[in-house]
Length: 351
Ligand SMILES: Cc1cc2nc3c(=O)[nH]c(=O)nc-3n(C[C@H](O)[C@H](O)[C@H](O)COP(=O)(O)OP(=O)(O)OC[C@H]3O[C@@H](n4cnc5c(N)ncnc54)[C@H](O)[C@@H]3O)c2cc1C
Image (cartoon, rainbow, N blue to C red; front, side, top):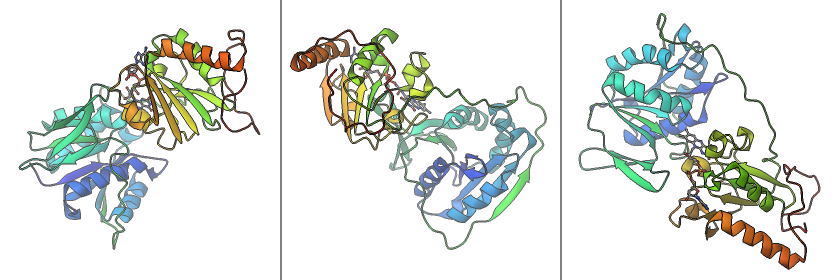
């Protein structure tokens, strides 16, 4: 395995993405604190400001790699600019955050470099000869340890797996700039459009009832609304699988690429508990999970775990609730829960 480590920074609005500092922390641990072995690359059309920020915060050498084709992210353009540069450098590891950019670019870079590609890395394990990398597989049910067999390995680092680098260097690292003419490629990105905001009141709610793919059909969202109506100041959340299926808008998504929430009570219903989802509920005070698979990863995060088919459990729960309240069910209109000011703390409310 080669000696050097290259970290490809991600950034926006002239600031480094905080996940870049988690990738730097991974690099720092892999080289045993030998800053000489680390080089940070900051790709962009004008990336010097970010390069200087990272050099000052880390003390590592940083190269601002600038090209007109790097105005917005495009895998083809990044590959044409970074590929030849990395081929010349031949590092042992190329490290990126496991984001939409990271997991789009990493496999293509690995092919270009003839390197191993290990995505979603959650930990590094020192072996006798080679370092192994832990990643989850089978929707979080298993952890695999993967050892690269090539001179170079491209890694994407799962958000939250390493704490952001915090080493307070004595002096800033050296910064240099490389300008590359990359010509015309096979595709180019013309711009980004902000997704339409649909409003989900997740941030203001003290109780969030979240649906996962385990609800089976969009129609079963009615069960989720039934539970939400038990609480004032409640909102409907969901996993990305539910958004991808088109059952709810992305404004409801909780997790790494959705909302980070901190309700007093979070219901995870039919949600497996993938790390990307759990990253969004770290600050929830109490988590109740309903899942028919006793080995579901969500139970590791849950304070209360219910191993049951949700389509059987929720109707029984509602029946029992109504029996205790002495009221009847089924007449209330299903509506989007809205945050209400000055409403009482969470707890069942009379329907
Ligand atoms: C870069 C990246 C970012 C991501 N960001 C996010 C994010 O922000 N948020 C997010 O949620 N995901 C995110 N994901 C996706 C994430 O990895 C998972 O794929 C996703 O969270 C799975 O959603 P799920 O738990 O609903 O579905 P599944 O993993 O399919 O789980 C469904 C669960 O329902 C259970 N189930 C099935 N039927 C029933 C039943 N009848 N009763 C009870 N339980 C039942 C199953 O046992 C299973 O545990 C991201 C992935 C990547 C790669």
